Length: 230
Image (tube, rainbow, N blue to C red; front, side, top):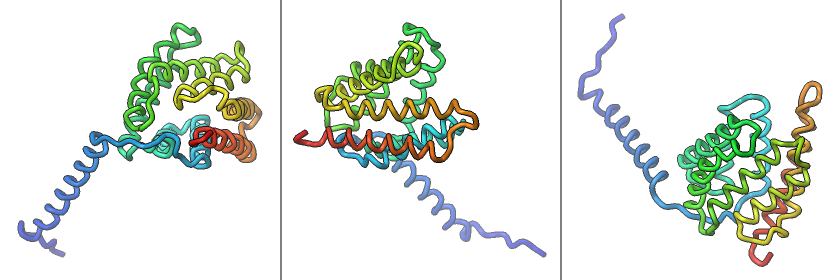
């Protein structure tokens, strides 16, 4: 059986089709990464953000880094309205900060190594938002709750709830008292996650459903607190 060779003229439409597709993709990526895009961080679906956070925690403890990164990027699109390709850039920045923090050990002074990465991350978030916030302060408070959660032998979950409350207060430029319920519920979700992953056999599906329910309530409380008039 002989293979029929295509002439240059016959191959030309396919070549131009591929070239056009590559050009369109390049333009999309360029526009996505470079063109200014701002929206309100007060506008998000709390149920979807909670679902994605639960999924990320589960992927982390199941050691599925690729899935975790994909979920993180999607979460950034949901919570901060990041454009598609920019969400992966932001996800990389967040992952880098977390990795530096993880490698820094338990000393508070060493933990500060992650602060420049968090400042870079929140600077990128600031570029997406119509609201203004103090980037270094938010980054510093974010790192603080990471430290509180890591050093559970030293701090309580009440301390974690307070640290979460202060971080969110700085991000949204509202009184910390607005986020008391959110901080308590999200800290409790972290407590549940910390406890069930230590049990024999690890967390069950019912455990993850309970964690998700707590996170839904937390993000709904936050969403309600940041709406105009509250």
